[in-house]
Image (tube, rainbow, N blue to C red; front, side):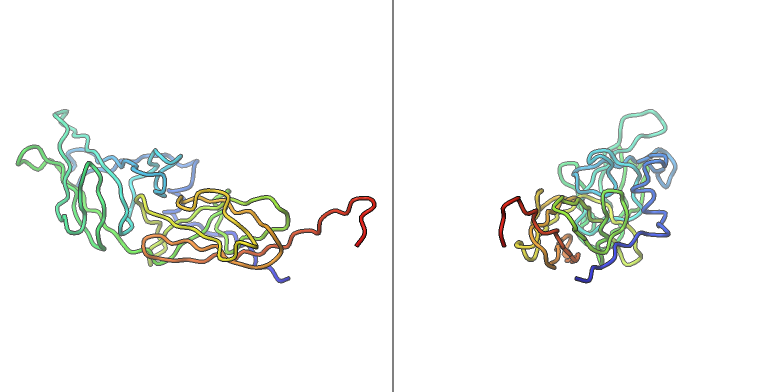
Length: 234
């Protein structure tokens, strides 16, 4: 049976290094555009690619996914009371129960305010998901799952925009194996990370749906024949 190769990235985008490079400094804050304080990115779900170990942000993201959910807080330089957070364009970026959600593609400022006074702001942008990059447990990009023994393999999904940038925000995922006689999921089907176990020799695909985008990853299984016990006959 012909197997699809598993490709390793020779060059990794800076944005991907920031998201997945554990050796790089971690700073989930960014200065406001008036330079009166810093906005801190807060994770609201384990499906956010910007969040390390599911609950701690590693960076303040560059760009967000449409439907991505997140939160922020603002630390002012003047030492005064913490300002409230609100979006400048609620039709683009909604705010409810301390959670921000990009409702559509576009740009909106997040405002830090006290009463009627604006303390600072920062513009954020959201883009639709146009592709999903699959990564193995070593954070290497893969183009297929290839099984030569019964052990399960884990992988994760990274939503990308049309410029190949990872898109931030907690998102809703749905995974399935097209032919469950060949392989099956052995973890939840709604996380950003899943594990797949081969069942029988053959070819199928792993499907993931996120943010209105559907992507398929080929699965190739070629299991060794079962060991024959002494006395077995064909």
